Image (tube, rainbow, N blue to C red):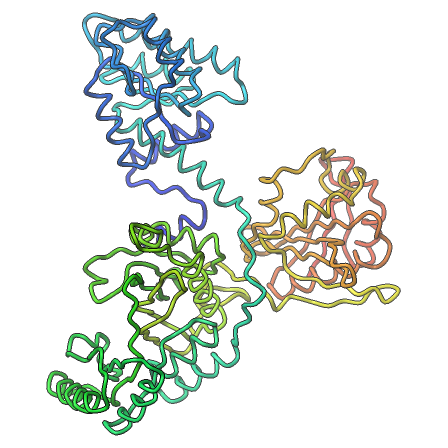
Length: 637
């Protein structure tokens, strides 16, 4: 279930728990725009239901809005002195339609809230139907006056008859039977806005200094599989981590007592103490058999501890294969946090990245979060923030904060390792010690096996979301020995796209987008750069001499992955030099490799240069029967 949550989050999907919430969610999102924040003001004639609404709001992660000083003074003037004086704004049980209208006007004008929830509990004193009519009329006028920036207004009329419900719905106001449902509806709006913002974020680029030794790491794993093993040995794990620049404590594998003593002397010479751990493929949790001894300071102590560990393991697990002991330097960091990071294999979604609180009580504490790879730093930070232990990574009392992004970088590196080496089935680092100086892996286990393709296409066999397809990076040479570097687009290319578009004329932009384009917002460009690489691909071209972006070509496939629609745009001052031809050939090669059957596109009739190139490339060109100004072009692959 946690993996499904991770998959929905990655896809930008809101999750509901039952059919009632499903319809409430549709009711809310279908009627009003999402608010700019999560501060909710609550207007009610019942104090109890107002408090219940605030409690639920806080539980679901919303924020009870404060009442600004100016709004408070206005409410004091229009409400009886017995009103609550705070949020929820309880206007007392005898409130009639005029009192509701006076208070609602103030809350709609108050900048200290992002949305308003109007609650009504039916009484024998005031007509619930009249109140509903007044509220809907006021909200309608408010929306007319603030078309673009109107706050969402939600309603819950407890015990309302069908006529009241129809009046609220007819006015376009999301309405619910209870305050609990209404607050959940508001939080659906909040989550929707957060999802849209997350999907349009531009994550930071990976440091250029991180260049993993993927080939060396793969050799370690394939050698173990060829040897018939399902688990890597400790020294192999250390070498695997080092290949991806993940620090691990000095680790040695000793097959007997004397070898353990010899390795321990090397560690003692560096001024460190020693920890011993049982080495067995069949004993997953070493502490279960007393297989860990800490803080050894002399060769004699190492000799005695090694004998004890081996004897105890053979007694408690007589059928286990015991290879000796692991000898490690004892890392003592009083203020370090113990974390767990890893990779797991899900039967539906393939590889999943795990993060949480580590240590021997990891299962009992059960503080972890999951995400689908690949990860960038932004996604890794989000994964960390969804755990309780994330709060301990910040500074508190006399404990300094963990080094910025040190943990997030390890998560990104693990995700990259999973993409490079699909033979890795499971990977646990527990604990990873993190403090102000950085991170160090103390213990880890890695399960390996032949890769199992779960997903079609050319992406990693074990990734539900495709990783960056570095295999499509190209160096091309076009007319006049012009050298071009082409690579798949990445999310962090947004600033590059903005700069590129400054060099495209208004005429060329109209030919590309079929309409005058006066501005390109962050959201618009972010949607162009956020690709899943499975249904969409975009190649951007750079002038090798200057490093400037000079063109882009993209392809989006249909839902059944048979046909793709292309689009291309070049810098206006660099057209006619063969770049467009080269990019079109590249996208055609890509489409063939993905198994698409056709490539199609819409081209304005006045774009004669593009139509001529399409014919030369073998496209069939026909007038669009519905749009006289457009030609349909199609290439059968």
